Length: 558
Image (cartoon, rainbow, N blue to C red; front, side):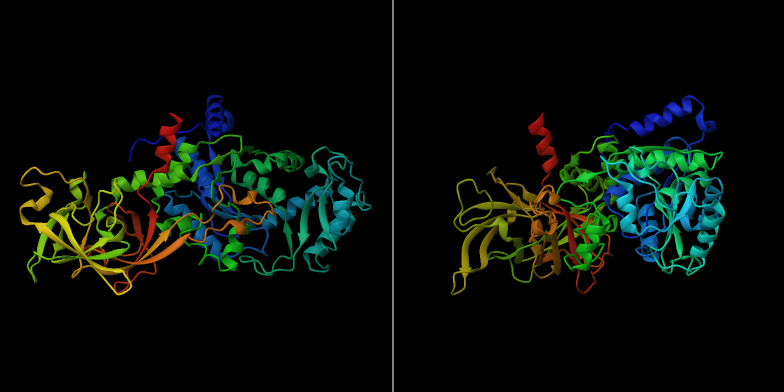
């Protein structure tokens, strides 16, 4: 793979400056803290590469911590998938933690805030809390229970914990400033009641900490130095700091926000991706059309290409749309280096070579890779009847069509010159097969008399080719920004041709490869064996086409 272009990364610059100034005793400690309520997508890959990359670059540590504070949406299945995705991307956490590991400590800190006069149990309904909070133009007004005695709030919190109240009847709120210009500081919730079994703690708890309370304090417990998150939490930073300062903790991580990844022709929301799964629009979280890491793995994206993509787009403070063509370019760059070349026919058309001996089979030596000799070679069978791709033949061809057509000669990859001499059709005019002759003196594609042949096409011996299901994966949406539809319904711009299933043929050398095997079908694109595949019924997903739109964009902009 060519040397990766590195985009700007202001977070890395902040860490470098901190190290120069001796901040945090020269330590760098980061964390990747996903909520286990869905499968990770390419946007999470950016955060993974950033947090683990910082630790690697500066000799620090990076924890994987599951933010499992909302048991309604979380599941062990998602935890397992997240761990698999992080490892597949090539990263290894120093410690594996869960926010639920700290539930006891967080509860003690909540009681300490009450004792310090900085938290209280409130009995307003959720609707009333929203009403009392005001808005950007109207100051809030205090809850009637804002000044209740600490002893009373401590007793009520314990009763909340013991399950004496229904959901929504009581909450614990921080006591900050109901007139603060930042809405997050208007007495935010710390604990709420949820009578739900937790995937790790079972029914031990029926009150759960809010993200803003648990996250920063969890960072402090773990000794995180740089708490890197997306821009949506920028307005929450003041609250992140407030909880740590209010408890006078010795460790105070620095929250740094960066812009989320927005990728064209993609939605980057676990909630919306979950709706695609639940509505049966895709086969699952790992559907190869999905922008999930598991979907991209199934589609055949190499992990190195995703890491290279994240390096190229850089890290900045401004939201922008990244062209999906850049991601596909990174995938092609990597696959170009590592993918074996094979023959595959997606839309088969039979060719009969009339002057080739019946029953004869030749075996031609074909390298696995055009430049990497270490990959070796394999033997390709050649016989009287072949499959070619239907796109390589036209009966009534326009002037600039240089592939096979009656009276024209083409070169067969690794084999002979082939000339079309006729076409056989059924009673409806559909082409059944193409009749050709070959030049036995042109083995290896060399012209015996210096005649010019403009085009080389691929082929398969019909007697040896293996039938295969080919899933031609394409963009899931037709709009660059699926959320820009007039009615806001991103599903209205779903691409009806996002996966075309074809019955084609492959060469026998790859028919028994295992799922995850990546290769290039010469002239057709890069493909990967799907987990649905069996030796009796091979199934391939198209990873990317041969066409590199990103290179065309760069040439146009140059």
